[in-house]
Image (cartoon, rainbow, N blue to C red; front, side, top):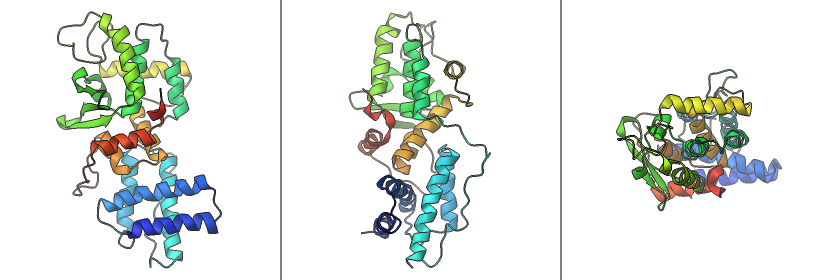
Length: 301
């Protein structure tokens, strides 16, 4: 057993038995420390060799994933508790997390929507309008797949593999990645395609794009922004949201659900933020398992 597994096991026993924490709280602490374990293992770091500098890199990755200040603070708090336990148990000589700071209140951090707010936005869509089912499919795809707005507007039918459970995304620098796709996305794109898109007159050159405007042409980035802003106003959501908010929410909800940090980075198409370390390539069946296990939409019908 690696030192990480052993120490995490001992830490959770300590929280349960000595601190008397409820099972949910213990699980939350365990998930937070496992995120640090993912980060450390990618760099061949053990609990004894991890330093304050490494922890700052870890916090930077959480920030770059677009997590809310509250989520970052909770994870950092869990990590601090873990090292305080190791120090108390004399497994380490020095606590590397001692100087680690919580996110500053008021710091410019991306907005994140709760699952309830996302459902409220989607429920606000008028499905009797011509664009209703298209807009619902757009929001489900943004949230369930964590796409950038440019990736969404360029999504083509040839990039969708519903039978295999993936979509192929062409990201920054023309780099391709596969993202697991939920049943809710398959359902909404199916409804939009069959009932609306198939009855449109499509402009030449736009036949393969999934999402079209009423004139049969590929949607623009600005149009996606406008759709979301209008829905937010109609739903009474006062947060400053954009298409990117759904990407941040995708990452936050996966991470809060207990998903692997590297898996989320892979699905978002993130470069390794800490320079020369090359992340272990994660196979697609593992990414699919992450979505099925940890994304709120994985149980949608």
